[in-house]
Image (cartoon, rainbow, N blue to C red; front, top):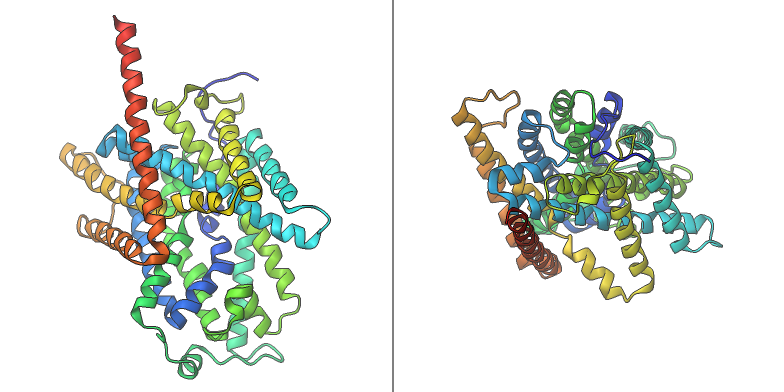
Length: 459
């Protein structure tokens, strides 16, 4: 296998398009939305609108930078250009760690479903097998990853659109043997639209904002396509209707069909409970298949995204040099293997180490999404100012600069403060903060060693 250090532009337009459409559709929508609804009632839709709006604005800022300078390091590279090498190093490794931890989470979720179907095979065996299979697809070529993700995404989109069609038919009285009340009547019968007050809506927003993590992957993947700036522009422009259709419409239908205080909403998930109340046969089997596809898609993207981020860090001198080596087909195979190896290790910890160990590891990634969004917003403010000063033309602009950029920063900081105040989220902020400080220290040590070596070479 010949080695280089260059990625191949192997992703086709349809790959990037489908990735941009379905990148944020995961188990958080099919199952996790039930927790938000059970907490905030029908007003959970407000939490999705608010968190969705925040993500749309962040994507617009990221799109401005990515169109101007497509890069597989995406926001980590932009943070380095805007705030210095330490910022790029820190946010890049934080993001890598987030996706490395997604690998065991999704592998365990997939294994649980497969074990229910084939109980003679242990869940840890399924977890290792699924992770190994998707690692192989990532090792062949980026086109192979794109092809797998294309079909995963296609099936997810069909599933969501099918659910929306069934829900709309049910509300219109078009499904036989199905009677649903609608959001107005359900709100009236079960304590109003906002039964637990605005505090519960804010709490639900903390759940919903993390459901959208993955939307930004398209700016990383587009760097391996033929026309990255065009692909990023398309993906960013479509983010509004994607959020609207897949999340807002879906959640509206769920709160119109399922009472918010239905105990099964949390136990079996929002989609399954809604299908059960619509008397759709084999509701559990349907949702299990869809969730299996969703977690496989997320696991596939986790391996891809983690490997590309650590590859970019290595290329910029912020990681071991070996991680920037690529195969003849342009795959950073050492980066893929290193990311997956950590994923395998954390998967093993879940099964064979005390529960507290894996729980603490998960907590360290609890606020990473918000730190990434914050880095994007601050980077865009700084780089936009530099572009304006240099007279560089800006093909894709953030709306109402700089006021919406400032609003995003204030919103993210406010969410972090709320998480720190609420006992159930406090550990996530503390653990993520401790991890961030550790990475900053490691970055300082890493750079100091490099500087020492450089001085020795010059002497």
